[in-house]
Amino acid sequence: MNMTTAEENYLKAIYHLSDGGKKSVSTNDVAAEMKTKPASVSDMLRKLGDKEVIEYRKYYGVNITEEGKKRALQTIRKHRLWEVFLVDKLQFAWDEVHEVAEQLEHIQSTLLIQRLDTYLNYPKFDPHGDPIPDEFGDVKARPRVALNEMEIDQTGQIVAVKDSSAAFLRYLDKVGAYIGARIKVLDKVEFDGSLEILVDQKKTLFMSKDVAANILVIQS
Amino acid sequence: MNMTTAEENYLKAIYHLSDGGKKSVSTNDVAAEMKTKPASVSDMLRKLGDKEVIEYRKYYGVNITEEGKKRALQTIRKHRLWEVFLVDKLQFAWDEVHEVAEQLEHIQSTLLIQRLDTYLNYPKFDPHGDPIPDEFGDVKARPRVALNEMEIDQTGQIVAVKDSSAAFLRYLDKVGAYIGARIKVLDKVEFDGSLEILVDQKKTLFMSKDVAANILVIQS
DNA sequence: ACTTTATTTTAGATATATCTAAATATATTT
DNA sequence: AAATATATTTAGATATATCTAAAATAAAGT
Image (cartoon, rainbow over all chains, first blue to last red; front, side, top):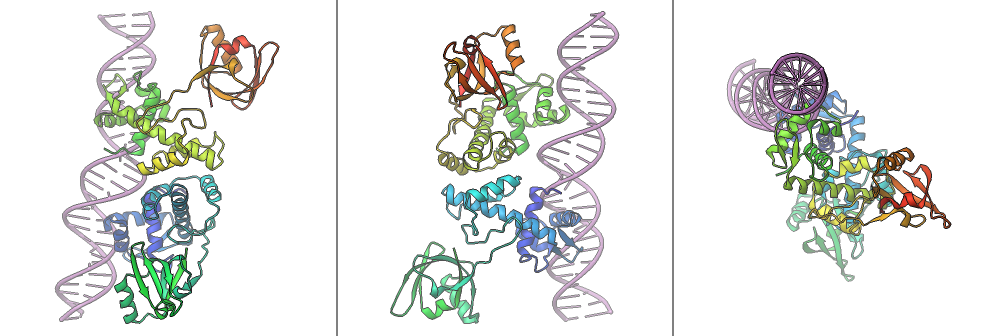
């Protein structure tokens, strides 16, 4: 059962919005994510329901099925492999690749993806640090480390905080070190363990060892 | 003015059938080439005519315009660059690449094609020996050599004959050495200059120096 | 519980790309 | 020049993917 490009894109959006199938997703949320109208989403949900990649109850939103999850992960796998190709081989910057990868992910050829994977030497993470599912849809979770444990020149992405008090989150927000931010350790002061951090390739900030110890990072 | 994948494919077919814009092309011929019905072709020709990439007079077939030629050549350029990528980098066999390249050629990104061209080291010919147009649509003609002048292990494609008498063409047809056939010189006999030739990677045949001298080949 | 608000679906369009069947135009034959 | 054959177009469907406007349903507030 083949899916059109539009169907693949909707399924991917539902997968992401549902946090990998954990939550159910509303029509309105899908419409916002896809930058289209709820009416169009209703049409598409009916179709995806018919294909049994989602479970669709009218007026009550959708849940992705196991089959749907598998298919979404295959599309994500293709997207991220192409991103690695564009950055590693064609010298794209990591923020230039998304639009092109959105197109490339819909190319249909199992052989192509196998060969590309081999050619790229079986990468486990894309240029944004996101994990690449294997051909069975399994994802390798990247171990999280506290920011203060990272070495100079190492890069990563902020994924969580240990201390989630409002005051701490306000501070993080203020300095731009939000969840999802790309960071690089520019310097570490031996005396007090404080760090100099580059956030999103533009903003530099200093933080104490205690603050850094509360920020969890996946390395890339 | 953007074109859909279907429009690009029709335009490419018309470009090939018209021999690069030299002849006009009939609706039926396009239908046969596209493996579709003449009625569908009529619809599409009207649309391509509106976009001024072809000149369309009802009941009298089409001629491709200069703008249409330029666009067809860009699609061909992309197709052939992707073929080089698939063969050189991903280890595809030259007869496995067409279907995938048909999809890849429609990816829209000028930067992607520039970078791919650079990455592949500006190839001038694809794995089938066909020339790759440059970004302005200019094509480097590959010099043609007589088959008897080729060395052992050299490969190429039969593109023309010097003696085009019916008898000679009948002979070529009989042995499978038609225009467009891929050939490889397996052996040359020094005594009489006769050759052993592999045709289309399957059929071996022997031919005299005189016959070979009348066959023109582009090398690949 | 009833009313209001927000969300979601349906109905009816539009645009692309295709088809079959019927009509029409061109080309060929006698 | 009329009849026949071939090629081509038009008319009317179908399927996908989208939209707007109206109707229906669910959720929230009083």
